Length: 344
Ligand code: ATP
Ligand code: MG
Image (cartoon, rainbow, N blue to C red):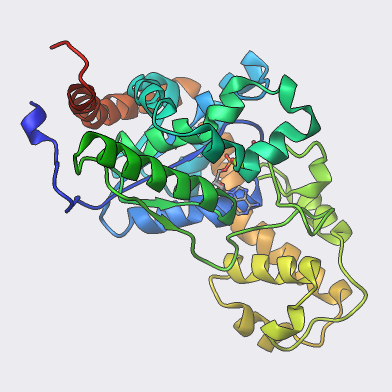
C-alpha cells in the first residue's frame, strides 16, 4: 500500500485549506479565503477543505457553540460554492491523522521558530504564561493539516503567510533530517484584491472572528440592515476617494473599503477608483452596502436553508472525512516508517 505514496519531488498538484469554527464566518474569510477556494475548485485540481475544529479549541470554545459553528461553517462552504462532490469537505477532528502527524512535527519544529510567530504573539498577548500549549503549537498542527495530504498549494489570507513559511521549514527539515524527499514544499496562494480585510473599527487590525466587537466585521449571517449599518459606521478619514491606487497610500481605512468593493465586484482597485474617484464616503458607502448585500444575501439565505437539516450536513462531513482518510492514512503510515516506528 505504501508504494502508492509519492516520494519524488514532482508532486501531483493538490490544494488544501481550512477555516476555524471559532465564531461567525465574516467578510474577510469569504473574500480572502472561501471565494478563492471556490475558484481553485473550478480549476479541476483536487481540492481538500477542512473545518479546523482542533485549531478552534486552542482558545476556549463553548461545546454547544462549537458544534453549531462547525455545522454552520460547513453550510457556509457549500453556500459559497464548494461542491462536496467535487471538493473533499470535512472537519479536522474526524481525521485523526492530522493530530498524529502534528506530534511528529512538534518534534521537528524548534521552539525559536514558534516563538517568532506573530499570531502566537497577538493571540497570547501579555498573558502568554496562561495561554494554552495548543495555541503555541498551532502552526505545527497547521503544517500537519497541509502535509498529511502532500498538498502543493494552500490558498489563504495574508495573515497566514508566516505559518505557510513555517510549514515549508518543517517539510524541509523533515526531508533533510531523514534524508528523504517525502514532503512537498508547499506554495501559499495569496491572491485577489482583499487578502487582508481590515476591522471596521481599527484600520490597523485585521477583521477577525475572535474580535469581541461585532461592529468590527460583517458576518456572513448579517441581514441587509446590519450590513448597511456596519458599513455606514465603518471608520474612514475626512478626505474623499482618490482617483488612483496611489492616493490610498497611508489611508488604511479608505484602502480597506475600496479593496472590499473591488473583491466583491471581481475587479481591480484602479477600475473601482476610475468609477468612484472624487466621491465622498457618504456617497460611496451606500454603493458599497448595496453591492455587499447583493453578493452576500444569497449566501446567507442558502446557509440558513442548509442549517434546517443538520443531519444532512453531518452526512456530508462523515463522507468527506472518509475520503480525506483515504489520502491521509497511507501518508501517515509512510511517515511512521521513515521515522522508524514499528508496526504494520
Ligand atoms: P480567528 O480570529 O479565530 O483566528 P479568523 O477570522 O482569523 O478567526 P481563521 O479561521 O483563522 O479566521 O482563518 C480562515 C481563513 O481566512 C485563513 O485563510 C485566513 O488567512 C483568512 N482570513 C482571516 N481573516 C481574514 C481577513 N481579515 N482578510 C482576509 N483573509 C482573512
Ligand atoms: Mg485566524
